Length: 268
Length: 338
Image (cartoon, rainbow over all chains, first blue to last red; front, side, top):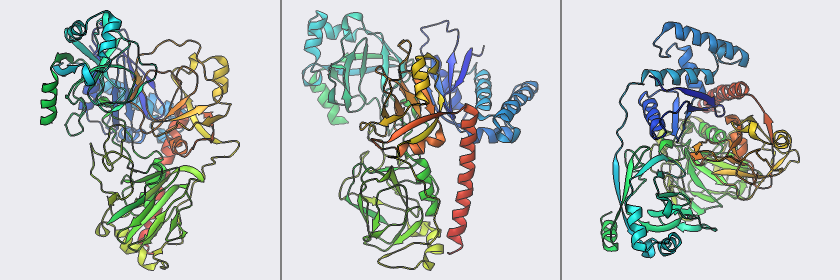
């Protein structure tokens, strides 16, 4: 069954795909899967895709999609459907006074996305992976660990044990290149954000902000409590897929000592 | 060919038309803030419109041509000079090796663009683009703004047919030459009391704005705040408040999205904006007017005028068609040897 979706415009060259009637709330990778299916179609008019938690934003080229319509290249499983679509597009195009009667770029993009998603509904999607992230907790790598543990009423040891005991899930990649929004942080470990953010958080820093934990992929200003640091590169422009993670992946933090962190630093 | 940076200016970066396609990894599209000015500058020197050039911000650099070269400058007026003479904008110009290009503070507009014939600035592309993304630390020179003594590799004379065709007929003096023709310059209207008009569509959460905010958004004037940068243009003015401040899950945003954080001061997202955000969206500036947004400097006045999606797309298509005509016109001038 093709997914039930609603589509609305985001300006004149992007649109937002929303899933309606989400029956399974645990399915965090549904939007990322849709993004992969659309990417695989390699459509000339499709510029970029942003999968988020319950939406998918598609950036398209209004001229390229009009060209595709006027060339008669729109893919369709049903001739009747495309004839109806064209009537719709001509109508909306005539209202807009654009496209030489061929229609509105937005309407064309919406129809084509619905068609691509319906056609790809049975296709295989990427399997979630489980990624281990080795972390040195505390010390200069985790300057806020001591205070955070105290706030949670735990020893540093118990705090680290709890943080490493959970399998987190990547809900989406956003905020900065390669940054994973992780779900699954135990409530006992929640921490308030810093009142005044640090000007400089080193790349690889592992932090907690509110009810979320995560890893800063790049050096940046930041307001999360820093509890450790990893050498794993969450974003690397030299890789084929620059982001290490994608929505649906599982992540485990593994405790290492400082010597191992330094050894990894020497290797990289 | 190469350009040497004698003084870097306030924030001078290498930019092309961006690296779309990596937003799934939360990498910004980036690229020139004023794509129109960069595209015209490239066309004027016979480049592909998407070649990498320099983006100058508020205060321009001093550059030295280490070889003979053909250049063009479009965008903000920064009292540009070539070897001490007034540098003609919106047209190609040839300089002899050793020529000194100097720029002052922006008088009209905020960003100027320098294009170099023969393929533009040839720093190494990263993920399909030479654009500098200072946040990700990639593109341009080491992912940062230019510094004094940087040397920028530029395209070759062999790759610049327009150069051979056009420049011999231009009269040379003081180490430079330019033709009498030019592309239509743009006036940005910064500093004017009635401000810069940006056409915009109501955003997805427009209906959740308070009634006063709904009428204020498309009627009142906003001022560009000093904290504005390539990620977003921050505005001060009448508060743009929502009826409810229900938390939203992070969702996709694009350049032109007018986000309103708690507090009611809108931010118009720009080329280097985050890929996702959690704030409600009051409006969306049309693509054709992002060039004007790029030229709004701190203190300038901005007004929004409401347009529909159909109007916005009609304007987009009309602009792209006029670009095709402009490109053909420039090509004719360059090859007619005038």
